[in-house]
Length: 302
Image (tube, rainbow, N blue to C red; front, side, top):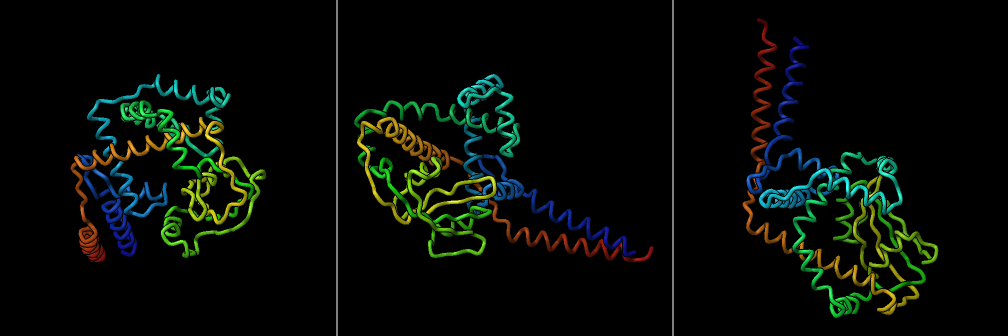
């Protein structure tokens, strides 16, 4: 009898959990979003449920528009992009695969990301072409003047570094810098520019004093930097940073254009958020009742 009770309880737990995980929590242009997808995004990004939902809505809108326009990517295009990446890094395709796997990335997932990138490029192709047409010397110089901090070097910098397993606590610190969550490791120090890693230097050069860097995914979690102070500031002249200014202008304008495009998609989309907390609770209650009934039956002698 005890074995029957335990078995019934196990079946109950599995069924109740499956209902919650697999349940549809939103519908975007007839494309469902499930609890499983939400949990997966949260695990990958460390985002809050609300932020993870926004990510998924954006993905579904993009997928719906790609499908509506009949945009596709074939294997030859993926292979060509992989070869271009390998050539850029002076690697063979086999060496590229090994390098990707050494970083703890599944090669099939890497190829899937390449496919997604190519689909995005085709979707946003006309937008990017328009940005290219607007990339004139006048607009680039205006960008340079309005974003002088991007072209300013320093002799030394004082940074506060924040490290966490997930993104959520770092988001909280960005909103309230006085917070010190117990699950965030914090360190502060001063570095000379000529002794800094080039990657770190690139990140913090583009961050103004008194501001946070973007949150950066790492192999072991997430981190960000707060710029406390910069000493020995020097703004580089336009001619010496013209290529960087062009790159910065194009990146900025593309980001704005994509945001505007996605906002238009969202305004015209049919998005239905299914408010299910109470429904889930009721479902769990019903499931529990069913389980108790089943357990009671199992406990009753035949």
